[in-house]
Length: 598
Image (cartoon, rainbow, N blue to C red; front, side, top):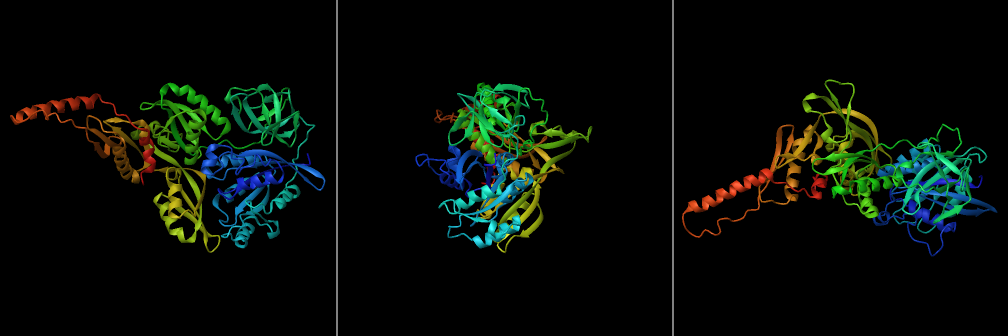
């Protein structure tokens, strides 16, 4: 056990985590020259296309130094704020972390966020200054920033270039010397923490775990603490580039387990594996339950595929524990699921993965956040409102509270004015402004979560020419003047397009939504009124004009009354069509609300 080192790589997005992991694998000989490729651990098509890490990836390496053989268990983590739950899970399974900072971009918002997460879990931090070979690199200045942030000495910072392989040996030596070996007892009863799982259509659920005490042996009877179900360990092994079966996995090590579980609900990330006859009642303190930030409805395009969508989402939840969903129904879209996501990118990735991995086409409704409504009858107990259609009758409401966040934005000093204007437009209040250096400023705001759900991140990148980095954390609920804006198509309300909006913005957003839908909904044989309403009050209206057939074309000459008679007959027909006509809403219309500023 003294030769095992468990560590993860944490950094802001695009600071070179996956490339550094590639070099570590090359240097330790974990991959052959035939298997080599860039971003080797990013094995999902989506990760390669977008150039980001979506899932944390665990892999084992062997390294010899001074006649001693060491086993390294590395976890490469995502850098985007929407996948910070993956980072918290990886940190729970490690003793040390490589904090990677880009020598050209310096410390960013997610660098600080991930660092605090690691320090809370008492991890040993090894600072690595990456990309020092770039012409735009400024290693001396960035070194000072890291010293200010960590309070470390300059000699402790490792200068590296993941592209050229500079500093890789120093990193491996630092892991051996600084990261402690796992403190656990292989003679004690078995206790292992599940930190990830994946669904294999041939072998069932594959569980990834870290053993904290005892050992798991092939063929052993084991029990999952949360579900109290017992299984046989059909296969155990280590996570090399391909899974390597072993006879047993001992304390301190990381491995995988195949038990032939076919039902995705039986495995819960964060659960503890124990022996069947164990009297253990205290599970390993893993990671906190996930708190979704954004809610949206996912509905199958074909309503008969509802059960298929359910099983696809359960299998996806195995691999992405931050996805939360409950069934719901909509008068416009039939049966579907109300899903909780950690952000808009997370929503987009889940939708894309459902389509690619499970061949499921889904319709996504307008994303929103969770509110709390208090009625006059019971002003102390609030009703959780995940869907605008759950809001009680406005006449009975005492107050509505919405979630607020504390946002940290780091940007160049040239763009401070633009960033402030954007945050104030989004109902933000500035708390603090700190100059990290003469060129870089940290701004702290309090703002409603609902305002950052849609296009905030995109617009922040636009106003700062790509230089701003953004991170946020929830700070609780606050009273707000919110109203429910309904959209009426042909006089009937479409619940999937309803949204809760601050009163000051309701008129403007209602008008924009009507204009957008007028462009997207195809014309029918009759006029379609599109209205935005707050309760019974219409605040905006647009009309999609009818496709008009020229019924007077066959009249050549003759009395005007002949033409009028035909036009009156057409008018009656159109009126009847409008009463019984259904309007088909295309998928783009549901997502159009997100792009109101385009």
